Length: 494
Image: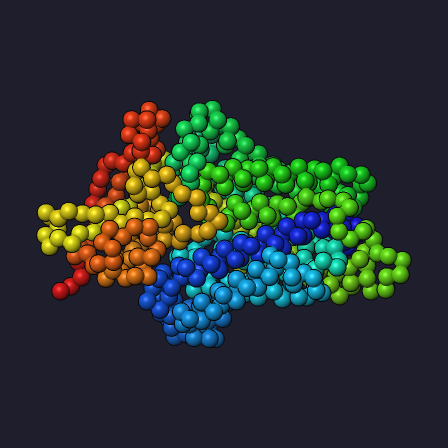
């Protein structure tokens, strides 16, 4: 680092800008494919009804995060238009086109992505109530101030990215230490690979590893989340102490974060959470000799300091000052006895609190949805609907979807954890009875090939991974038992 300019972090800037923009492409594509059947005009939880309620209640309006749809009437067509524009802008940033211009061009592009996606999450209700939505928004806002190719990134913005990674990792670590006993007695990962919301192709293999390895996993997690994040700030010492050691310490800390997140990518499907953390961790990897040279040329005008124009320094320092103010609440939260997880402390969802899996479930309960075309439900032959990501068919290998986010499948995992079935699930069953094409497109398998079932019902099963011996005997990846009725049979009124 060189005063105002983080001259050794040009490579980090490229990774941050292009990586964050790529994940915005994924988020907008996910929204195009899923928002309308889930939240559109005829969705399970229609966004227009939420917006109408907000307009009729001033108090409710203060609870809603900013969204363009408060000022422009929501329609499914406009939602698609917003997403299409977001995909185009984000794709241009991935290609590096706006970065060829002055710094305000990529700034405006990222701010457009930030506000455009916040317009969606603000009306996304429970289907957009995940921590990685806030993380994407905050990362997009900060990326707006990374500048362009003709100048190095400013030190203040790079440090703000370290602060984001720190809150993300240290917050998750503190949630675990304060959470279930399984994180303290080192048994959490003896269950987690099997009971996580959406296992991946390698989750079963990870689950079958020895118990000593799972204990080592937990120890490694605690080190990576509670100790390593402090060393992300080591490059700041380079402003005071000459030599490469501070930068090396920061880079090693970043690589540890990247390695642990890569293991999570391999063994699970957590949307873009792990992918985003990997991208953000590159902010602490400084590579001397890449990008603009240290300092400014002798003939540089006086309003260029360390290679950065003074107006841009003022803008980024203002953002830094804003974060100093906004960060007080999340800083207190990190050390609070009742730590909040995935919480926003302001309407613009900046300087948020993050965290995940404070407790780990010990057994996996799956809600299975079935239908029949028979008239008598008591003597009927029931056929099972297949979901894309969540376990169903015991012989199917779990698929890898992350960083793509299957919102319906994720919420299905939460159903057995609640005291009652959510409103959206009842609406979902009605859509199945209507054989609604948009809803059926969210599924992997419709047993009735588009025809209406007479009855549908929900039953629960306990799932567990097969042992190696069980797999050799049955070729099944799962064993399911302890079947219990949850809802139904239900039918449409005739």
